[in-house]
Image (cartoon, each protein chain N blue to C red):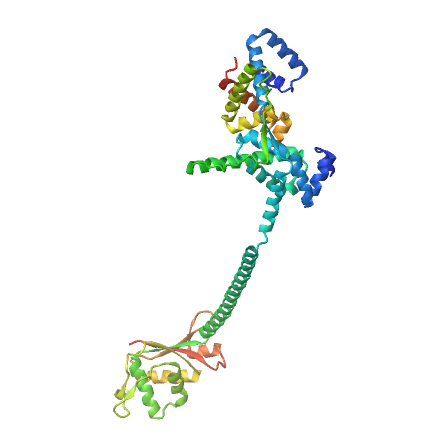
Length: 199
Length: 252
């Protein structure tokens, strides 16, 4: 418990311990607590709205399976982030391999079947319609540029700019040095800037 | 250096001295200032990526349902049956393997003991082996032997071991009375034979050989240190030996 307290709140430490003891109710609480976090990470890294729920379910099944292996060397959020990144990588690879063989067919889910919805956080168009439309276009260009980056640059840029993780947290999650984190962020920013003309 | 400062500045991880130096440079360099603005804007707009809102109950229920289904699927009757069959198969396999291993070990042990016996017998035989070299054909020699038997010069105790231990008399027929030429053997006899006899019988066999050989027959053995010994010397080395292995060698 003391080990877990180093990086987690007492409440989360207690939740982890209960989950590790096989308490199903505690895991239900953990899902409730982290589902929004996991859905957002998947959406940010995968960039695909249709597959979020299936991927999130797989991620939570993995968390359930491996929660006993969590040793408290980082926060639970970082540990979950690592699982999400690993699964997104596996999923993307599998999807890419399958798409070479078959035409992609995604099951169409009706809105009432979904457990989630997208919330647009750009300013309301009524505030300044012309400016907002332009901002949306640029934001979309930036997103397109980010998703066209190689995975090592894309992931690190999302971790830094979207989730505002520190260099240390990024280094811990990706298992690389802080120097490498800095150089990759710098390179990723340059690549996006070259692709999107902002001036 | 400036690029590193710029990135650390954007990330809020720059030191105070470097920050002051970078701000001074940006105040002087319009292009650097522009680059900073663009990178900052990229960061801000990227941060405005849409967020996902999750239904408070629906997804939780799905996940918990999936966990239950997964755990249930571990204990289906089919899985239990398959596991039991697997265990049974492993047990049978192990038992069979153990049986085969034991058999092999047993065979090896037997082989070992048999070979030991053979080896020791061989050694004993070498120790008590005599050779009788006869300068005649085996047919002539054994005809002579039978002749002497019929004449009562040798008795059953000599003929019996030859009959029992060799096949020289199998199918042999006596057609014309009791002469040497009357014995006919169905097939050519071997040029060398081995028979277990007493030392006295060995001497008798030598005596019979003297009657048919063109040269004096030799009865000899090998001493413990590898020397060739005559019969008397040989028997001095093995006093009281009840039997010897006699090798009959026919020179013709």
